[in-house]
Length: 90
Image 1 (cartoon, rainbow, N blue to C red):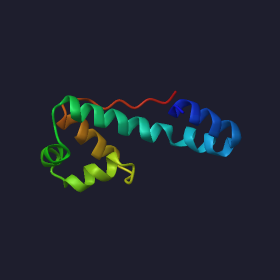
Image 2 (cartoon, helix red, strand yellow):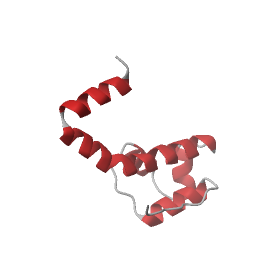
Image 3 (spheres, one colour):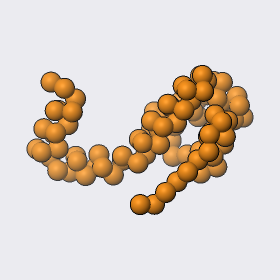
Image 4 (cartoon, rainbow, N blue to C red):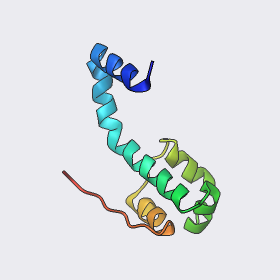
């Protein structure tokens, strides 16, 4: 079974799971974008951490969804990867 089919099935059977999935979507969207940017910049977690002046464990916690980063952390991360951070309310 494909993951997308499994998700549809679970969401249909349990609307609360869909609600939680949707609630967490922005957090995981930021994480996916940060990981993609880090990899595109050719940086390891350790290299990015060194550029940011933080520990590799902090990058790992963020990328695993186990941290709630500050806006300052995200701005610094973006800058160290040659990116700019844009946040929108839609």
